[in-house]
Image 1 (cartoon, rainbow, N blue to C red):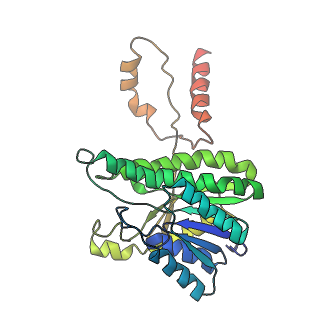
Image 2: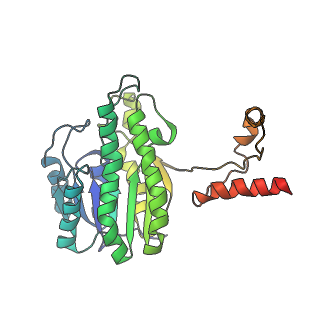
Image 3: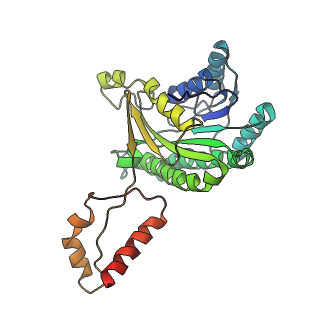
Length: 303
């Protein structure tokens, strides 16, 4: 069995002042990583800030014999994120792992949601991940090694009432992961996504108490460690909760060529069950496979 070891590696974990992020930082440090504990120290809705949360986690890591520094940069501020990465390089000379965990919630049904709350959630989850990836990317390219873990969600993958902003932001991270994994391949950069189910302050009150108790956030950490490890896959969506681990896939059905005639809309409507059937579906290696499949069926139909 291959041992997961982060000795000599440097990791940045955003939103690491509490909840799952704190456990990610502790988990990486316990296996030898030097860790940048990044947290703005705000409330669940993103309001306020405090350096205390990140420093407490740093103190925990140091008390256990590890190495860590605290950073209070907001992931929405690209200049501050760049400064954080530069601070990491100045102290430890490299950055091997980035875990994009920072996030906020501003839940409401779409009809009642203020657009400012929609934009802020996108800014933190999506643009926050963009900022951190952009800042670490040149360093990972230069050292020919990198591991980036996005934090997606079942809400992004499958939807959840009252979380249109959160769901949009979380699925957008998967789209970012898909392309960065392709662009990073030649540089030894692996990019994956983690969909955690865990009881934290962000989920407290959303689920019954007995379910909350069963969803120990520590059970999410093993999946993160795999996705951040030297042995990590790339372009994988790993789901984790309550000690159970699954993978999610964005698939493409085999499809059906109907051509283009005046009655194509009606024929497509009549054939929707066949078009949407999961039998024989594939997981495309890149976006070009959709077009390739469509052209293949079209060419076959002409023979």
